[in-house]
View 1 (cartoon, rainbow, N blue to C red):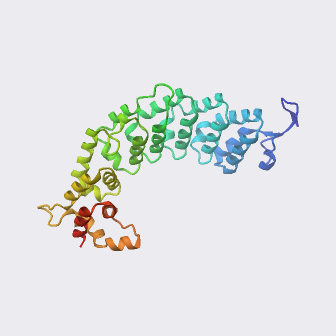
View 2: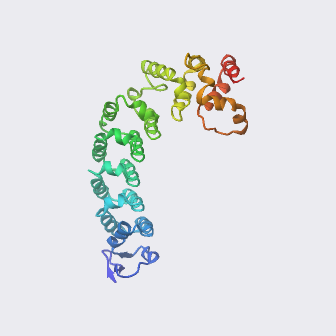
View 3: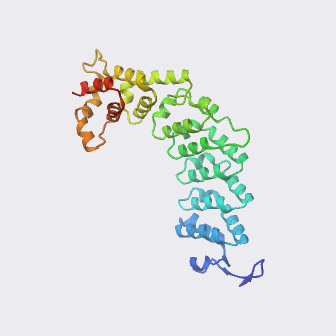
Length: 328
């Protein structure tokens, strides 16, 4: 037994004794926190992580300080650990401002590797919520040096989504300036990708008006250029898993004018193809079975069927007749 600063007795559990996590949850019970932290890092111990997260919620201020200090000493290994990353995120919630800064210091210089890690990416996203703005800016600038490879990365793309949601009390970093420069000539590839498309959607939802450049949010000139591009490749985009969503958005926001031009494009004939695009190539299959798809509510292998369904449900009689004629 030993006395703590308040004069009450606490039980010290040596690392050689088998851990009784239930007994250690007692508010006045302490132990060698570094030993339990090591169990997470070295043995991938889920139970140890869950216990320390619970202990953070109920521990005395002195215990909490000692516990988080032990965690900070192993901050980076915990961040990239399957169970340790949750513990680090709880420290952001329960730690003192100084301890939060200490954890942010462990992220500094490692933002890229953490953002591209399956577990570390969650820590970076959480850090953006709580660390001081000077540390947020450091993290942002570390990512800005690796834009092309991170924007489309399966884990880092979620960090970029969080980044675009940030609100700054001071002068914000010129994020979109660097992003536009780095992705010049590549935006179409980014937008068509499964991960990059998430980032592009987030840009539209959260960035300043001058940073938005497409069909729904763009300035009139930019919107017109984007729509012309979509119409130029209307057939190809209509049968692509991701691009078809862009066509659908254009149909929704472009009104009857876009719909008329779109149908003209996909229904026109071509010298190298005897049938119009609406019933040719990949669209042929779903059109042949369109009524069955509607009746059975089955999402077939093709993506254009959703666009045809949208047109038939929302178009005026003239446009519906154009499509219905070709279906017949």
